[in-house]
Structures are given as C-alpha cells and as structure tokens.
Length: 215
Image (cartoon, rainbow, N blue to C red; front, top):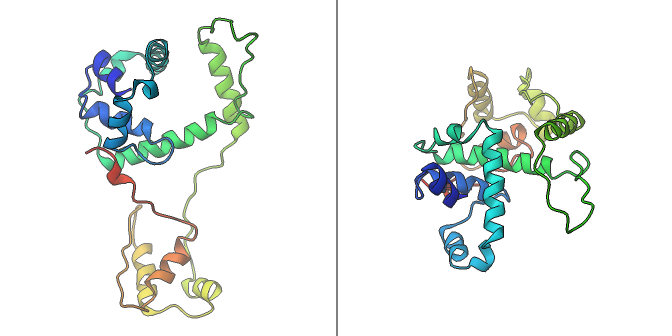
C-alpha cells in the first residue's frame, strides 16, 4: 500500500504513505516496526511478486473508487497524521476487520470452480450485502457515562468501605468536566488512587502502542 500510494497518488513514501500503511499494518493490533518492513522489502517471496502484486493494486484501486475516486484520495497526500490519530484509525480498521470477517454477517459468495475467472465487484450487490450485514449486526447505541449520584455508596458497594478524601476529590474533579477528558490522580502510597481507577474504569486496559506509529 505504501508503494502504491507513492507511485499512483503522489504520497510521500517516508511520511503520509508510511503513516497510512502503518494503520493498515496494525489491523492485527500492533503496527509493524521498521525492522519488520525492512525484512519484507528484502524478501519478495514474502511480499509477493507478479500477479499477486497486480491483484493487490487492483483491490486498492477498487477501494479508491468506492470512496469517490482517486482524486479524493490524492487530496490527502499532503496530510500528516499524528500518532494519536493513527492509533484511532487503527482501532476503526481493527473493528471493521472483525465485523467484515464474520461469515454469519457477510457470507462468502459461491465460487463454482477454482478455474473460474473472478467476477468484477458488483457495487449494487456489495451495497445489499453491507445493508443486510449491518442490520444483522445491530450495534447498540454508543456508551454514555452515567453520573454517579452517590459516590460514597458506590465505593462502599465496590470496596466495602468509605472513600478516602483523595478519592472524593477525584470524583468531584471528574464530575466538574463539561466534556470528555482525563483525570490524573496522584497520591501517596495507600492514598487510594488505584482503587479509584478500578472503580470507575473496571475492565479497561491501556496498551501503549501509539509510539509504534511513524511520526
């Protein structure tokens, strides 16, 4: 993809093309390192040659047409993507990859014979499959945080004791925000910073993958 963006659409190989390609490369959670890319570039038997490269480029051209043509894609050739935005895009790609790979939502079309030439993608058929699969997925409405009306009772239910002063101060700081943001709690050992995070972010794991994306 990096080479295709450079050769056909004028993207900077070391900048914008590398940034978008890293997003695609992160669809299995972690972006490729420079060493990984260098290994593949030196191994055409891994990267593919000939008809395989032609098939990849054909799929990329088709995808470009789906988003209103290569002119739209070229308009982003000079855009530099920051690491946070690359991480966000990678998350979207990962989720769409999981959804599109679900054979119950998007069953594969029949292939009558292995020697049959592949058919050109039918945009009307693809639109019908997308509409049917999206309806069957039936995603719920987005999560909205709920106000904790009684933090003391919430702490008691979770930890069996009353919250400490630093924990109440953190709750008040979070409640005072008028939009999404971060609350950084710094307290002495045993002050209650970790239980506060556990209570209001149960099940959340932060993975520092952002620095793996190209600057």
